[in-house]
Length: 124
Image 1 (tube, helix red, strand yellow):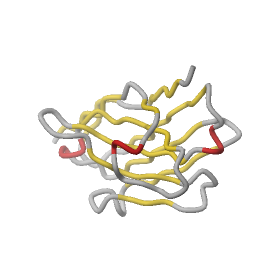
Image 2 (cartoon, rainbow, N blue to C red):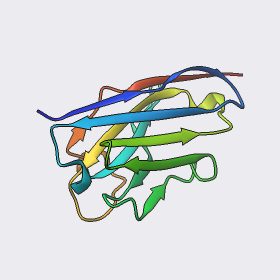
Image 3 (cartoon, rainbow, N blue to C red):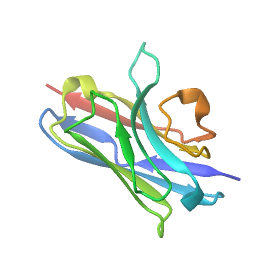
Image 4 (cartoon, rainbow, N blue to C red):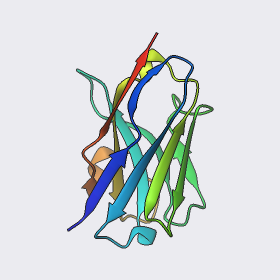
């Protein structure tokens, strides 16, 4: 049974930082590209960042470039999302997802497995 468990969310003031983690089990983690998505109330789930199975390449949404960093530790079956200079508009539930495709993808429908999400709330 595949499980993706996010952690590290919370309530933070604007300008602060958070490091989200996603621990994976039940799958060959080092064979999957991993992605982070977020969903704000009343909005569709949107792509944030993705990292290739090897960690050798990454992709970021324009809104994430410069403040977000995705990384992974295949020895720990964990993917991370470092978020700096948080803004109120970053408030959302953040999800990690696993994609068995060859190339990095931004499309929600291409991801095979999803976590339950972790809430990030940024106050102004």
